[in-house]
Image 1 (cartoon, rainbow, N blue to C red):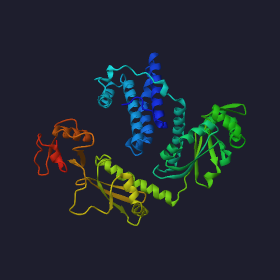
Image 2 (spheres, one colour; image 1 turned 60 degrees about the horizontal axis):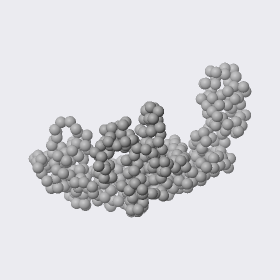
Image 3 (spheres, one colour; image 1 turned 90 degrees about the vertical axis):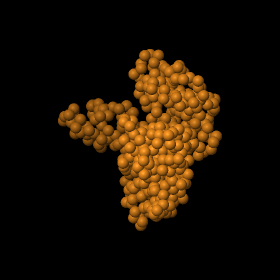
Image 4 (cartoon, rainbow, N blue to C red; image 1 turned 45 degrees about the vertical axis):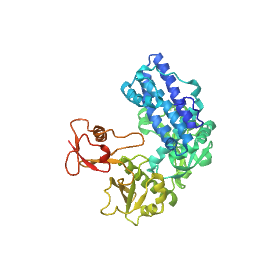
Length: 461
């Protein structure tokens, strides 16, 4: 792996900066014997790697944006994995050794064990605090909008027209705009607007007294304090309270536990905008629906179910398959959307789709699914036999496993290897297992597994 491949992509620069900053932090804390301080950041690293870097760069990693960009993404990811495996080796020795066993083949390392390597040193030239700040700002905004979606019960599959981010810090807003494409993609929103002026959008602060806590402490003074909070307090006082976490009213110092601050705006009362905020940032999300947004959301619902069906069938992205699809009732909006956007669904999933049930007497479906989407139901059948899939289906009662005889990167080495994949998929590590043919005879351990491609076998325990 070329260590010196440079990338202009902001997410590549961020993940390498973030990882090297973590290396610097861990070394510093370990030098001070503060081992307890490094466990949290280390365990959270993989969550950050998967939910931010890999999630936002899936298409680049798969090569959808071109070979050159894919090489940069994979090179950055590879360097990060090498660093983190060496860094975590003292804390999770067996896990890191397992990863290293595969990594060393890719990078051509002669070191038999990751534990033969020294703890890595950070590459200061790769640490970019401004990039780390920008991504942290993006994560903050994404979390706020997700909370609005969750509160309103709007799944991410359904696109929204606009989101407005309000913050008095101009640098914060510039950071958000610099990563606009990632924000809109992750949140499935069409338009991003940023502003320093909350008054422009009719945003006002509103004090919410905790009568139980105030009554217990202030006794007879509670009524006067509550009246002040509800009717007389100024915007300036509330903004100061948000920053400092304390507020003095009629000689009584109040805490954030005794008083909370909510946001109200005229848009909430008639224009479909819903708001949420932390102490510094306000997000407004246009939750009004129109026909095109609903149709796009329904299209994503079906796309998601086809992708899950492929995953259930143990297919990789390069495997060919055929899907049959039926929507009940046929008069539903979902049925109309599927018929109109069938080509889009096929393009997104890389899977040819036919409307209707599989033909009688044809190939047996590899796997099926039935699920509700809004007020309709979608039923799917996945067929892989005879369309390029070199696999073996293994049935264990109500469970079904698809094992590839050959993939792009590896090939089954024999019967024992086939059993290993079956055990792994079904989590059957105890006791003896065997496979039998459709006619009830046991599969012989010396069988050529290539000859089993396309067959359905049954598990014997």
